[in-house]
Amino acid sequence: MRKLISFVHISLDGFVAGPNGEMDWIQVNQEIFDHVGKRISKGNTALYGRTTYQMMESYWPTAADQPNASKHDIEHAQWYSKVHKVVLSNTLDETNLTNTTIIRNNLVERINEIKQQDGEDILVFGSPTATHSLMQLQLIDGYWLFVNPVVLGKGIPLFANIETSVKLKLLSTQQFNCGVIELNYITGDQ
Image 1 (tube, rainbow, N blue to C red):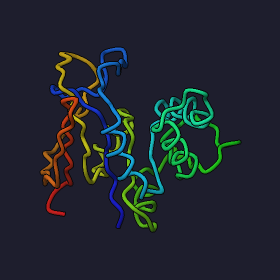
Image 2 (image 1 turned 45 degrees about the vertical axis):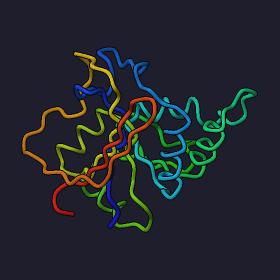
Image 3 (image 1 turned 45 degrees about the horizontal axis):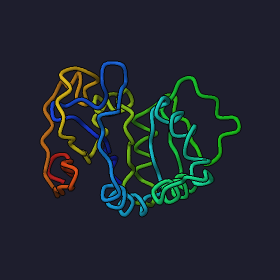
């Protein structure tokens, strides 16, 4: 069965964005892009909340066509165009969306159906509101955290309204030359 993995950049004090959604503190470089690119290249499904999906849609479909497109822009745009996108939203209209499924209700049932399909892990990209809902329903099977060397003090937390403890098993770590550390966990005794 496929696992649903939360993939997110996080501050040392546990925030995924500043108080107004700021993400200018996130450090990325080619080393991180290459590392992430290897892992996601195997995947065929990405899950987003509506806000993150709309942000991705506003950039990735044409990113590779820009005259100043970086290696990362080209590679990620190609992956994004092929990957099946699942979006948690009560407001998005499915009309004219290609390779995209909208989940409005029956979240547990629908996510478990997707987990049963063939393929690699399903990555939840950012999407803190969607991730909070998935956590509360105990649908997150792991965390792929990129801990940035910054303390924000306030903002949007990754872990919010957790009512029961979740034990994690560390699978791997990776330190990058920009000071970011990757922590790769699965839940429980999987």
